[in-house]
Length: 279
Ligand code: C2E
Ligand code: CA
Ligand code: CA
Ligand code: CA
Image: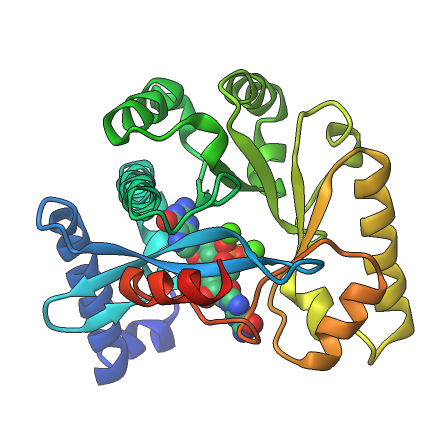
């Protein structure tokens, strides 16, 4: 770009300058955010479509930035991945979610089947002693492994399928459940599916969005559900926004749904009220 006169000229364009400064600022703020306790988990219910009850709460990270207000994960997770901070953030959210579940359990609000689902970015998991860290958090918070689900994207698994397989088997030995996130979107090889002890496939929102509008799309969802069933896995439809979408995924025998139709991700206090009415 330096050889290009035009590009050099653009460096001084005020908006670009602003943008570069902004992401630089965000990066230095992100380094301090963990120490300053600025991350908080929001919770979105995953609903059992045959009983209407909440089966799990997915913990979704929010960064409460002192000046910018709420910063969403699409903005800071990729940055945290580049900076090597993502695993620390994931473990922070994991601890918070386990503490929260323990709190709901002790208030008698959570039945024996309610789990928390936590996103794990495993791009850099080689450099961390992930299992030990997870075990420590479970011990500290008094949560049994079978109350925990970890959500991992298929592209993260495919990046290091062999190592992921080992980790996943060790998770299973601790009765921790595993969900494949954004299923159907990433670069993937179906061959890993039957080899790994996976509990749920989360059908990506992009499929659910187009349901009913496009016959081929509906057939893809039907095929994903059939595949999951034949491998002994359950399916969760992501991004359910309308009653029509709900009716359709139900017709296709999808077991669980998640989306704005049920509830957006909410703070723990609000999630508690959801538990009281839909638990
Ligand atoms: P995801 O794991 O696929 O999470 C679902 C995203 O879809 C969430 O966005 C959620 O708020 C949004 N969503 C839920 N229902 C609906 C709906 O009906 N319509 C629409 N349009 N959107 C819906 P969010 O919270 O902004 O998170 C974005 C992504 O950031 C997540 O996608 C996940 O990949 C990542 N993420 C969030 N929290 C964490 C975390 O603690 N660790 C890691 N590694 N990644 C996280
Ligand atoms: Ca997820
Ligand atoms: Ca997803
Ligand atoms: Ca996603």
